[in-house]
Length: 207
Image (tube, rainbow, N blue to C red; front, side, top):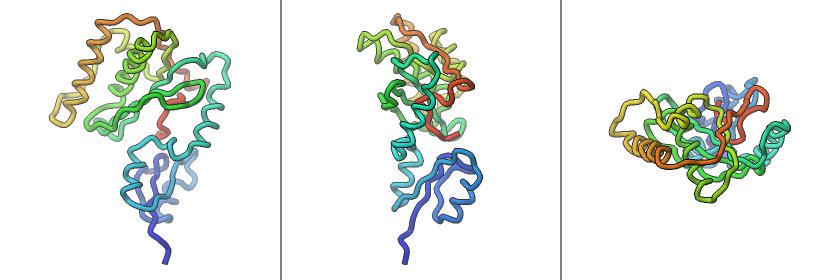
């Protein structure tokens, strides 16, 4: 008897975890750039579904990075940040990636009760604070117009309400705003031109 498999669909008609190839195939068949993988246990599948999928597709990740960096307008020596959120609000996470190498530099989450814009904002500030510690002047890329504006204004202008579930996220927001008020930084925060360059290198691949 074949061993039970659990199929994670990060990118498909309906992302989720499926217990048969037939149901998984229905979600990914004909779906452009579908992203899915089989696991041996539900525990592994659940962890992977809420994790960065590129950890499970290292070769694919590097190929994607090279394709995205073909434009001469991209500053290779830089950090790209991106966020993902399952629901709105929902489980939110963000990460920073070295644009030149595609290596993940930091990754926070998933955290309950957040939004994508908040994750984008926190990701930019995390990168700026890290670069200041390293005395580095390299730029930070983000594909979020809202988050870039919030960072410029030193204020996370979210409409999300504080709840018992997302208290930690609001604590992170408070720390980030405080850091922006108290610190100057030389690093340009640049809009990633997705239409011209493809997905930002820090993308979670769950669209």
